[in-house]
Length: 168
Image (tube, rainbow, N blue to C red; front, side, top):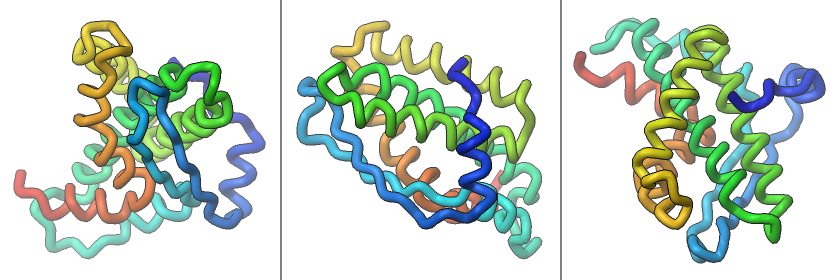
């Protein structure tokens, strides 16, 4: 599993630092694909998620559980991004690692460390299988997870609403 977020990262969240924008440029094999990620103060965003009105198809606990699963999948996705951009893009790799940490923390906040670890490991295995354990096939994973992870990281409230409105 990816290394846990550093204490400094948690302090930054607690202090409600300004939003920072990231742009990740993938390696030459994926050139032209740009993912704009807005880093949010996750603890603030996630705290507001559970205060959604009760008229929903999924109960708030189930919607939060599904969002926690989305965060774990995105942590796995950004782990692959960080490993796949190559040495030429060291800064982008660091940004992807930060997004991995943010996604893991979001999943933990909505579930727990044990469940997050299991979901993360399952997602890593699934993505590796999807690309036949070869980074040259990473476009398969990009097609499957890029838009989802941009939405989850940019606007977890909207993703929570998606799960809340979804019929069970």
